[in-house]
Amino acid sequence: MSVHGRNRPGFHHDDDDDDDDDWGDLAGDRDDLIDVPGGVRLQKVLAAAGVGSRRHCEELIGAGRVEVDGQTVRRFGARVDPEHQIIRVDGKRIPARQDIVYLAFNKPPKVLTAMSDDRGRRTIADFLGDRAERLFHVGRLDYDTEGLMLLTNDGELAHRLAHPSFEVAKTYVADVPGPVSRDLGRRLATGVELEDGVAIADRFRVLEQSGSRALVEVTLHEGRKHIVRRMLAEVGHPVSRLVRITVGPIKLGGLRPGDTRDLTTAEIGDLYAAVGL
Ligand code: URA
Image 1 (spheres, rainbow, N blue to C red):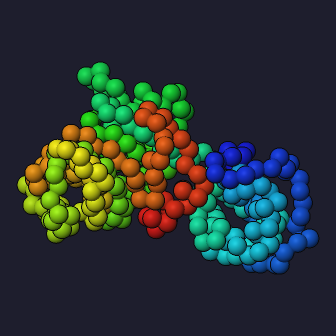
Image 2: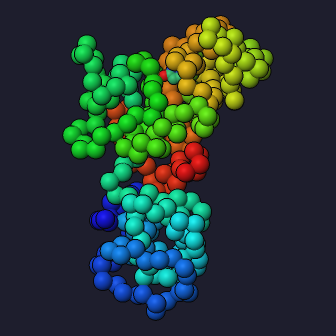
């Protein structure tokens, strides 16, 4: 069990990182949580997960906002096992394990969603450098499709995010021939008949129309192959460029093509929540 302070982005950190702050019973109430022998102090686990400075984490614990395995813990000194126990702040699970990584990647076009290719095409592995972790890509993007991909070595999360039963919504921006008729959104929401069954959009809007081109945004929660391209082609708007801009609660934002970034602690909590973890 080790916690060495990955310092996930999105939160402020102080340098109060020593391990011998023995608050024990000095603060907070008693609880029934059994200290894990050899465990790590709760506030240290929270700080290392990117929740905030050690002091801020102690305040959260004192305020009763931290749960371990479903039990509110108000003791600063509680010793927990970050690898096996589920820790939540304000009900949102925190990424306590330091060996698990969660990345957002902006896949450029002409890159294969795979770790290698026997035909020598560029793959997402070419953008990950020599990361030691064995990363899974969450779902796939077509060779020509760009945008947000999530990469993680959290197998359970990756599995759930990719599984249709969890219905994680994804949003795409497509460049299509215009003009787009006023009832296109209704048609997509009603369902488009494709050769492998009906495909339904959860949301649709036109972002821009100029001359003979239109930029449209489509949200759906299924992941059949080429689904957005096939839907839009079926309704008379073949896609010339397709970019995925969200996966569940995660946004592509300003991440540049080919770049990766660590998800923030809050984003990881939102992902867990999206798939019931
Ligand atoms: N729909 C597509 O057509 N392509 C993708 O890569 C993802 C969704």
